Amino acid sequence: MSEPHSHSHAPESQPHPHHHTPEHHDHHHDDSAGNEFRGADGKVYHSHDGLAPHTHEPLESPGFFSRRARPLTTRDFKERAFTVGIGGPVGTGKTALMLALCRALRDKYSIAAVTNDIFTKEDGEFLVKNNALAPERIRAVETGGCPHAAIREDISINLGPLEELSHLFAAEILLCESGGDNLAANFSRELADYIIYIIDVSGGDKIPRKGGPGITQADLLVINKTDLAEAIGANLKVMEQDSLRMRDGGPFVFAQVKHGIGVSEIVDHVLSAWEEVTHQQRR
Image 1 (cartoon, rainbow, N blue to C red):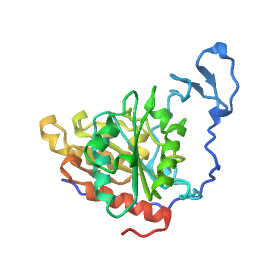
Image 2: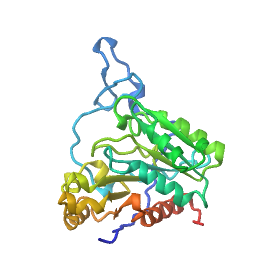
Image 3: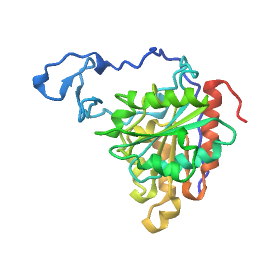
């Protein structure tokens, strides 16, 4: 199994508005056009539920790790604790990673978690059933429509419970799991201070080189379920080479989260980012 690769970059200062006011909230459009409208950025937005407008316009490129948006340096962590966003396609192990991180961090840090599903609360219920945290520290959000809208275009559906949990439990680290989505889905920096994107080998060794902002721009890429590689016919060496190339040498970890393999490396990455952004020392 290949060792995790890491690449460190100092965070860049970015302006941070006090309130989340994405451009599409400041539009005026003719209701006769249905649920589609053109935002101030010139892109066409639409909504499946009337609450979370988003766009499906093609991206020019998957982007680059070295040019990714950096954590917001002016954010008030008393308003909302350091937030880890966990995204990835359906079935790759996002909820298993949430469980593993809760178990690894809960004894030394005040932790709370928010899960996203489209029409159910199953992932939140899974965490409660497996005693990840006290039930009152876990919130399950039903996003409706496209999962990526709730982590990028209209994050208010997640900001509410995250801020409430942060205040109720004096949280130090918050975990936010996206609903399963495609390789283009990635968290807004207004929501996630640290972004983990998790894929697994069952889709074949081609997945890293397919790119997408999730793979190229997440702070950490996790390649899960490596124990299935032989059965699937996936070449881990190919996945390693492609991940290095697609992520400009950015960090990734081979893991078997369900069996605890690679979890300590993931925790180390999370705590290193927490230390850097919050200026606190790990315990």
